[in-house]
Image (cartoon, rainbow, N blue to C red; front, side):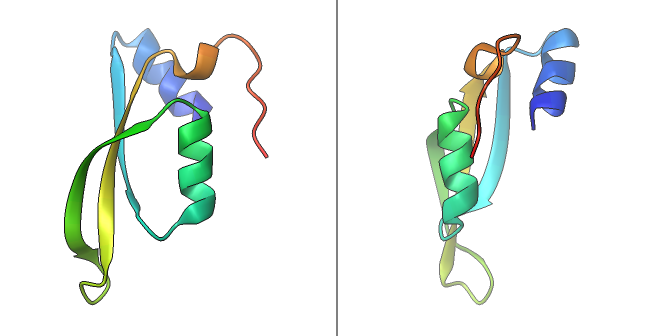
Length: 72
């Protein structure tokens, strides 16, 4: 994630978007720690329609990119 964010910032991007299943707790924890926030929801997007897809956005650089960001 950090390498992709760095490449995007170096290419001039100011924001990074991603989508994740609402039931993916470990990924959500990581993305929140990196500064992503939910900006949209696709109801029933994954699987058999039982899991929402969350659209998330973060400003670049991520979590003070250039500083070491600890992730568990």
